[in-house]
Length: 174
Image (cartoon, rainbow, N blue to C red; front, top):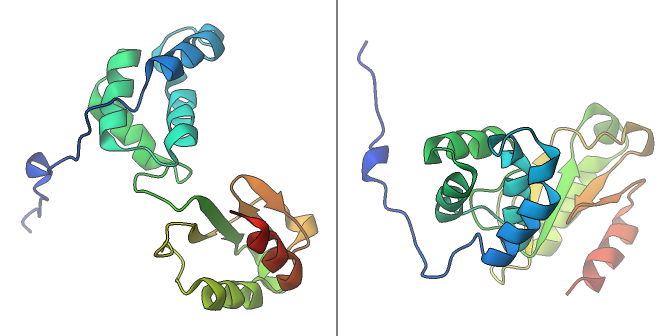
């Protein structure tokens, strides 16, 4: 059987003139994270989190900048960022809505909440609204089985969710 390869060497990467890993962000990482680790390379995950918190996703240019900053290869950074589900390698909406679909949330009615979210936002899981305000995702577990159903909105855990409470909360977001 022949191997099928993808032409990743020919991939075009979008670039911008200003860096994603700004001097201010580098200073924050140097002061906050680097001292906690025995080597600079060990600070890769917090560096990726810092970039994502700043830009709401991690562009490939930012991964190259992080690699140079930490003394890693770009491939090591891309491998790490693409391994973890929590890192977003494509732009997301200003508000990321993640609805848990674990067995506890399923038994407590997450499906009806998801259906109402799809109707309200006009998007399917994995999509972003046209105005860039919301991205909807389903995830396997938020670790809140005792308070199911659970939804995470911009790292803000919502427990014992009802559609009415969630809709009110979403309507309050800018």
